[in-house]
Image (cartoon, rainbow, N blue to C red; front, side, top):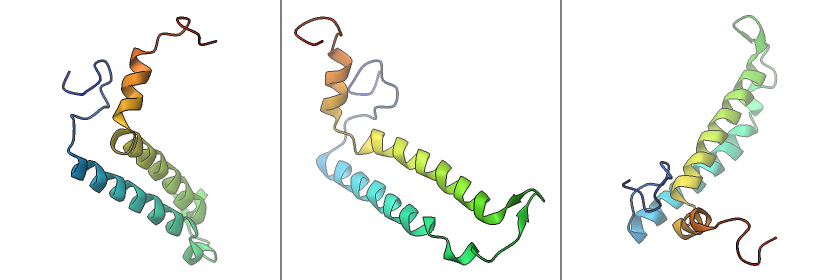
Length: 99
């Protein structure tokens, strides 16, 4: 395993502090972009059907939802504290004082 937490394929190799800050800024920038694009005032009066079935506004929102899922996945990889993942990997339910 190349990641810092064995058994988690989505954990990237250790990054420098500057790289982590850059990725956090990138992820948050993408979140802000999604918030702006979500307003889609340019499609309110557009009656175009995608594939002759789905209105363009609904299709646009479906694409925004997929993009939000990808960006959230990126956030868990690049902006999530690695220490929390390591703690979760070593935590054994039922042992200790946890209920």
